[in-house]
Length: 115
Length: 114
Image (cartoon, rainbow over all chains, first blue to last red; front, side, top):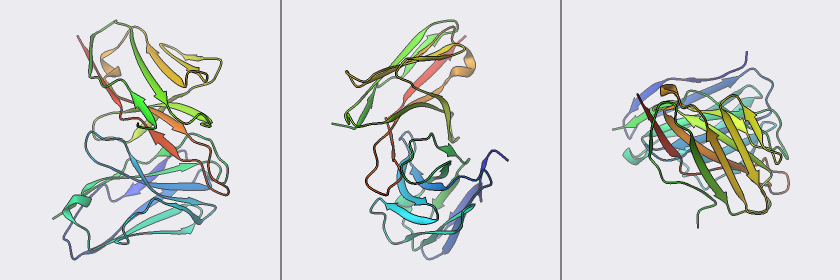
């Protein structure tokens, strides 16, 4: 299995809803990432997990809450989002955590719309 | 100044043309360099890593000049299917205990026309 999968593909939620995005990889990669991408902009890093520990939080608002239950799975819990949070949410993984300079492999993303 | 800067684009070229994209980065401690390709409403996909000695993959050639902090991508014999946004990406030296962070350029859009 050489891919990163993400569910759901599309999500529409209201500002009072709680939802979760899921990312999975079975390549044995030890670092996983969440990015947010707005139209015609590059991906912006949100969180990095290295060896299942939160390594980087790019000052993301607390309405986004990441979770890494095991080395293959990464979740992003969403609560009380704003319409400006509508974007493509991308998950990525890389073979090694720690001091890693490897390329990252991206999942297909979840397109989120907040009403 | 942005950490990674690319040609603004868009580039509109006919099939068969040769097109070159340029990119500069500001952090001299950057360790790894990549070109990613992103199709409309899809995820970024690795096109190629960029090595100091330069590297080629079919019609694609990547060059790195560490002294000038400059990266390039050359596409020869452009195909319609090459139409996409090309992202110049740099992996900076991480802080102690941290995984390296990918820093993305703004991307250059290429449109290859028949």
